[in-house]
Amino acid sequence: MRLSRYFLPVLKESPKEAEIVSHKLMLRAGMIKQQAAGSYSWLPLGYRVLEKVKKIIEQEQDRSGAVELLMPTLQSADLWRESGRYDAYGEEMLRVKDRHKRDMLYGPTNEEMITDIFRTYVKSYRDLPLNLYHIQWKFRDEVRPRFGTMRSREFLMKDAYSFDLDKDGATQAFYRMFVAYLRTFHRMGLVGIPMRADSGPIGGDMSYEFHVLADTGESAVFLHADLVNKPIPPIDTDFRSDLSAIFKDWTSLYAATDEMLDEAKFKTDVPEDKRLSARGIEVGHIFYFGTKYSDPMKATVTGPDGKEITVHGGSYGIGPSRLVPAVIEASHDDAGIVWPVPVAPFEVTLINLKAGDADTDAACEKLYAELGNAGLDALYDDRDAPAGQKFATADLIGIPYQIILGPRGLKEGQAEIKHRKTGERETLPLADAVERVRSLVEPQRRDKV
Ligand code: P5A
Image (cartoon, rainbow, N blue to C red; front, side, top):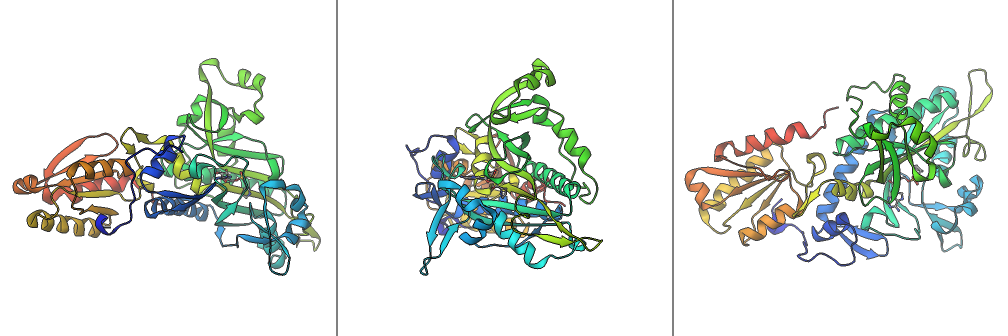
């Protein structure tokens, strides 16, 4: 991408309406624009990050055996009357009428709709287990939308729904998602810590939230400190095997949100020097709710003995549009965002220190083409602008590596590489610059499955 042809409306001043650093930086870096209370457009730079986050989620969901589809945002109220949630959901639900005066709603979640799809097509125990998911916009008329896309009214959710013959099967499905979540957050450079949580309007008796620790987090969390750097299940984890050992290993260390805190247990289970009270951002939430939806909505299959069995379900949510600011909360400095490679909008930016100088332009064009050929996501700052402005933009938007080239370096046949995270700079022969960046980026992509 050439910056001169891109759309990157960066702001010099820190916007006053933003209270937390991720919201400030997303506005300053031209990633989002507010359209109404709790409603945001994703501008090109922000959209690239959101797409990378979605891609990682999809890869890990697919690997765990879940199957992607896409359901609409607007739903018929009748489905929700079947489950009893149309009245129960309250003011958070945005209700609308179509031209025939039929009640509709903008989906805050999709348990009813997926159960309807399931009961239409799935009739036999042989078709189980099944886990279906989508990544789709949701609307919740939050009392207090705030912190930009961290808590918005319209937001993106990955929601998966599992169907099993019985509680044991559903528990295995729960473990699969649990492990997939650990891996998903890890691949984004985050530590997503599972905590016992309250199941709220989704229902059921077993639910875990995944929290990223950050001072600006909305929840108070209480945990065993060893959870913060616990090794993640490896990439070759077999999702067809029994994953209960991994689940037990993780959940044997105490962790709970304040809603579920059992102070006595926190004290007896966790030695004093390991007790951590912190703030957390809820980036995911998984539920086992048994037959809460399948029972009233009559989602049944024929069992091996010919009898009808009401299926057991769970649902599993991740907030991609919340993960983007969560990554920024976890990774920034005074100059701006510091993207981990796997979610960076571009992996490398090439800074031409003297756009308009024929030799420098030619050398940069060549480098830019080579970056593309090496499979790197590159942003070429070819603007006719002062070097200081280019450096400030590159730091602000957080691209992991900067290749800096001007007439002086060119004369000596040398380029400079700046590492955004550490500030480290290296000078090296021009001909080696692309290969050097490739060798730095590749091991961090974590995209091997
Ligand atoms: C699980 C999937 C559910 O809705 N039904 C389908 C279940 N769970 S949840 O906890 O209510 O939401 C799942 C995740 O969505 C994100 N999220 C939000 N992100 C941004 N703004 C919001 N207002 C918002 N509300 C929920 C969170 O990451 C949450 O864990």
